[in-house]
Length: 372
Ligand code: SF4
Ligand code: SF4
Image 1 (cartoon, rainbow, N blue to C red):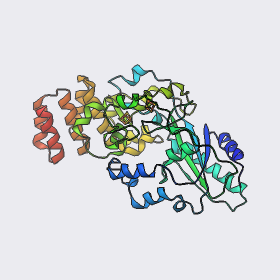
Image 2 (image 1 turned 90 degrees about the horizontal axis):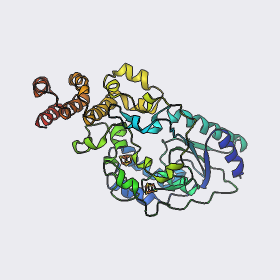
Image 3 (image 1 turned 180 degrees about the horizontal axis):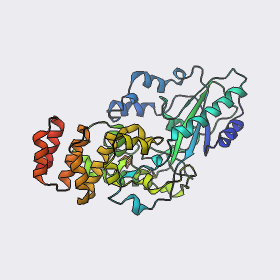
Image 4 (image 1 turned 180 degrees about the vertical axis):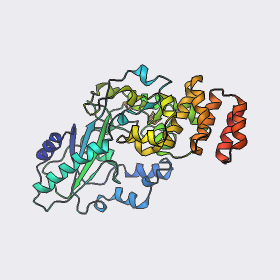
């Protein structure tokens, strides 16, 4: 039996900002998760719905046989040193705060692995562990709530009443029991507040505590690989990677403290759209390697930047967009055509492109832009 206090002290010594320990019991939110998947609200995130992963979420023993305890850790990431006027500048593409700096997996995983090694060593070799940062088929926000870290808000984020929601979560599962477990946090503290629901640019909350990922800018800009639905593009504003609106408006984030994790330059938080539109595969890799943005690849980021350009109202971006009408990626060509339409690029130029285009999706985009 482990002393919970000793594990927590070790987690804090490793640099985590918060830690709680809960019994490895099935989440009370399994039904809500199944309903969410059943309604298709996970969009194209097939890994959320795979039967084997659903089973793992329901029975933690499938992840680690004999699992007894889940140690939930949090690492703050909020960096407050970028002025809102910069973030909202239409000439800049805005990036969600969690991705302003180094890839959090690279920070969290070594620390969790060090904690796991410490737990295993303290158990004399007879203790098994498993660590996850995002990759586990586990309802981590729910387990974080039972570990006392915070409550799940109407915006579906885990919120610490005194620290807000700008922190990463990770977990360590072990088959060792602990002497004391944390008291679950209150279910919710949202009360009559509904600011996140009203502020969401794409109306992605069909009801409080339920997020329809298919409408969420975070999903559309990061997870979704295809053509962004036309009716959502204008609502995406200047977001090019993720979205923080439903966290920014949350009153609990008034208490968020600057994190020492990132020392952020403005270009990391809100790069100039013209720079994003100029990226090729090489310059994308050189610029974003080691950040979470690297995983979406150049084409998807440029697709997103085209939408931000189309929403900017800045005619000076039209030249760059016109160049992208000849891009090797049909995804980029299609979205640049839309943006050209938004910025009033000459129909002659779009017709020239239409005459030589062979991809049916891009042809449709150009026709729509000509119609617009
Ligand atoms: S991240 Fe943005 S788009 Fe997604 S639910 Fe929150 S406010 Fe809406
Ligand atoms: S904005 Fe209000 S309703 Fe939304 S999560 Fe925060 S406290 Fe809850």
